[in-house]
Image 1 (tube, rainbow, N blue to C red):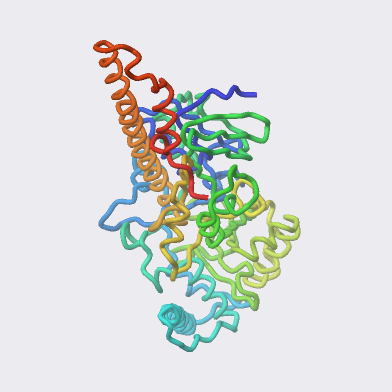
Image 2 (image 1 turned 180 degrees about the vertical axis):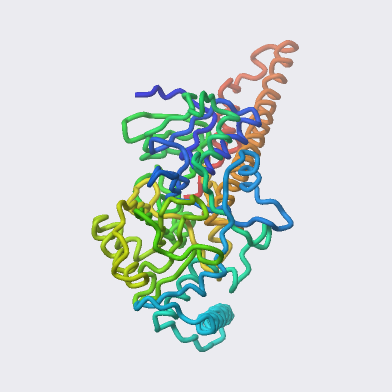
Length: 493
């Protein structure tokens, strides 16, 4: 068991938010920090795995928001590190829609269906806004046909920016780049960590980073925070930065003593968790179309989201013979619950619908399970387009000495890697400001306590001790503490 020596700050979680928060703290002179990470690696939902001879990004895979007036900070990090990326153009995907007989829908039909879907989404958005204002409006018709369901899926799961301006694209640009580097997307986190953690040959050797430490309980008071882990270790700190995902916060993995206030738990429960599952399939040779405008293709099925969105990896890794199909939410949960053999059989059935019965069987399959991972419980947060900013504020707001961070605390960039990165910076700056204010409060309190004692000392040198017979040396601090004038306020419960 680790000894409960007190640290200034404990950071829970070594994803992009936790690492960026630690970097800012170190830059501001906070060296006595500890980072507790539940898994055996840093990165959180940025994770690579070797598959078919290439680096497969199981979680975050794109740098979204490039080419605008402002520079995306994650794109800057990637450029500085020489991270290899490939431009992704989704715009042609809508013209590569296959029906179950293997025919591609004519471009005119696809374009018309897509325009109708965008118009319906805009109408639905306006309807939601009108309902908030107390007006009654007719809801647009729901998609019914396979092509309508397929387009609804790609529109709402991939291209919602065409319906409602998204801060990422407005601020940083509309281009997206797929990370295609053997070092992985996680390389950016290791480069950040090098700035404040001792590393050697690409490995973090600093004992302030503690892996395989599953935090199960946070005991917090005006005096600090006690952190208990699953293996029986106890850590103490003046403050905690908690970067656990919104899915973990909604689960029972971490308990709080005393419990979090109602305004905090209600905001956490309101936030939707998205599950985004990229299934990788390796083949002995490629049988799908390649070339300009063919990287992404769509399968139209009677069930929305059933192996709908496909991508070949030839642009990223030429000759890899790998396809990736993306599932979300309900389909993700269903697939996570079944065997990889069943998933492979389903995926091959879809591919044979599109490309015929004579295509080869996949030689390998990789199925991430973000929902069933108790350290993640989903892929990213998803706030409704029409939402109350107060919920985001309440999720982000500290409770006593516990500060919250993560992509879900980013008001403008939730769901994105740069949202997590910027949230870590923002939270650490807020904590530094609180530490500065606390130091000022303590200095003022000490000065206030010393005043009467100095006056008393002065009077004793001029008069007899009996002149103040009723004064005891403990009276003044006791009265101050009882009056609530010294120390951090308790969390509102």
